[in-house]
Length: 433
View (cartoon, rainbow, N blue to C red):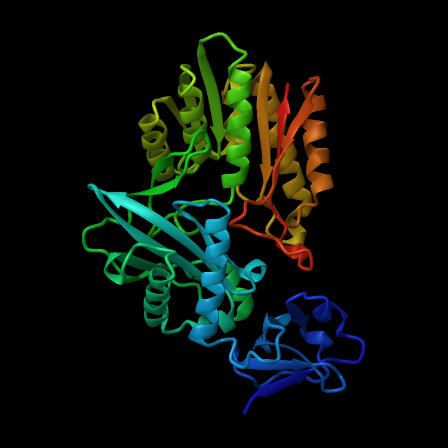
């Protein structure tokens, strides 16, 4: 028997607009007693159908919608969820992604609770595919509790539809339920779990293949897909890196041939600096990359990646909140300030805003005149106007004339929904100093 929840009178405006969430105080009765993740049909106060999804009586977000179509009876079934992922896969292919990308982005792909990254990997001349999944809600945790069978079926359908050339034998699946957000759903934070391995590949040190920013080729990036941060790599800056690299190439064509210096703050495995190096080297420039990160492991990967594209690499193992005063002023042609989210909750906003101001103040101090600063934020709770204000103050502290010449945002593999503003989080500006 289907579990039915009803909303209080007048509480249906948001869900009717296509927003996928219902909060517990919008329900007509207490949902207590329901097992977290149970499939739920949502109705308005008069009993009219609104959506189907799953519920969690222990979460502030009590209901998450998977379907607004009354004819779709089992939205937590394998068939339904696989269909959603295959559809998002087609969107990525249409957008031109050829290698690794985010395959499912939660609510923005109409699959709340699932973050799924897709990697094409290469090692010792062999290629394969890896699915790295985060199940961040009780509903998705329950729906995909038999994850191996789910992904085996997905791989078969993707192969049949021409979305992937890899078979199940050429597939690895890693479940990355090691994220703290699961606690909000009453779920345990778990160790990374490789539920389908590839005997011929070492997932802790493997090359993923990505669209190159500077040309139509691919870039190889070494990383750890088993225990690295997030799902092993940060894919969300793809669009912004492509925009910025093409801007830097156009600028470099007006410069005399010399060594160009790039500073990559919070570099992780060096995606920004590796792509920038490839673009500038293609124009005949020598490139020196200074990598800054607190993680020795990440820096080792970043050094390998940037050197693969021909960079001369300088490594600085340091915490950016403390160590940036040791780096020289007016020394770098390009400075990348792409930190992790400084703001994780509303209480962090004041401290987080100051952290963005501090980092960007250093970035503008360290860049040469006629150079670039790329300022990024992945804090969804930081309003874009507040981020711009931090950048403005940072530039004034250095008495620079600064022009914002490029504005970025979400890539096509991190789509956004107009009816779901909570999905907008990524901000990027490039400034010419």
